[in-house]
Structure formats: C-alpha cells, structure tokens
Length: 232
Image (cartoon, rainbow, N blue to C red; front, top):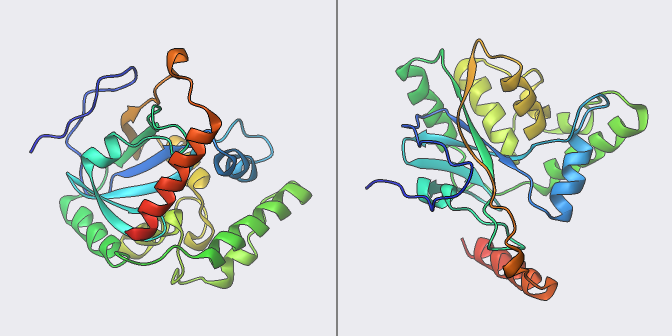
C-alpha cells in the first residue's frame, strides 16, 4: 500500500527507502528538546538539529525506540506530531550511506531487529546526561559514564543506530558506539558527503495563528501521548 503524507511545505518527493537508512528527528518545542539540544551541542557548534534517531529495516518499516524499541510504519513516521501540539508535525531528515551493498543492508536489518522490544535505558540516559554536563563544564568532549555499558545492552535511541552499524559493518560515527548521541551521528553524516546523502527531509508545520492551542490542552495532549507509549 502506498504511503501517504498530508501536503505541507518542506515535503520532498518520497523516495524508495532502504534498510539501513537513518532517520534523524528534529527537536520538538519542549523542555527535553531544548535542554537535550543544548547539552549535545559542542563548544563551536551551532544549534543542534537532531535529538532522536531511528532507522529503516525495510522500505516501509522503521525501528524506533521511545520507551520500548518498536517497529513503526512509514505512515506513522511521516505523520508524526508534536506531543505538546498535535497541529505541528515533527520534522526529520533521512540519510543514506550510498556505498552499502544489498547484502550489507540485510545484515544491518538483522542486527537492528535484535533490539526489538528492548526497553529504553534510564541508566544510559543518565550516563549521557552526566557526560554532557562534564563536557559543558570543561569545554571539551568527555566520554566517561557512557563507557559503563560498552556492549550496548542498555540502549537509548542513538545507541541502537551506533551499535548496529558497528557490529554489522565495523562502522562508526566518529566516536565509540557507546558514546554516540544523535548530534554525533548527524554531524558525521553531514561531514562525509562522499559516503552519506540526505535523501529526504520533512519540515515541521508552521504554527497556525488561528489555532493557537492553550497550554492546558497542550499538556493534556502530552499526557495522552505518554499513556499511549506506556501501553505499547
């Protein structure tokens, strides 16, 4: 069945996605995205774009970790909305390593699917948080707490992408897979045009002034989204 996406500015022609293509999601207009983007941003870097990752395991299937790693349809990804404002669609980019063979893509999918139903690790999340706070304090990259789990048994979203590429292809995004965050991955693919190409992007909807959503309604939408993800 063909995928559909409501027309809006920033929707490019939808290509045929392939296993191994990486999705880098833009931040939402919430506290997590703002603080997370600030923490991941390096000393000389501009504003952080990517705060969340997922990856294709087939043309219409995406492995994504919220609280649990689940398979999502392409339509679900294309029509993702802000948790605090269901009018706004979340922006993202899809990047492809163009040097991969079909066999390598199949291997990436097999490794990615080993994370299916694995739960989000608060331990690794805290490890990233502490390391990033240290980075801000000393103004250089520090990877200390993230190395507590070097094998990736307790992943967050970016851990899955980094460890899958490392184990399947012995490929890294400039740092050890245990240390990679969405911003590291985004910086790497952008700085290696000989390997990576952005094959699709989706800009968020601009806010409709006629549909200004009260804060209480936005918070209610956020709570509903938390309940939905907890039931998955």
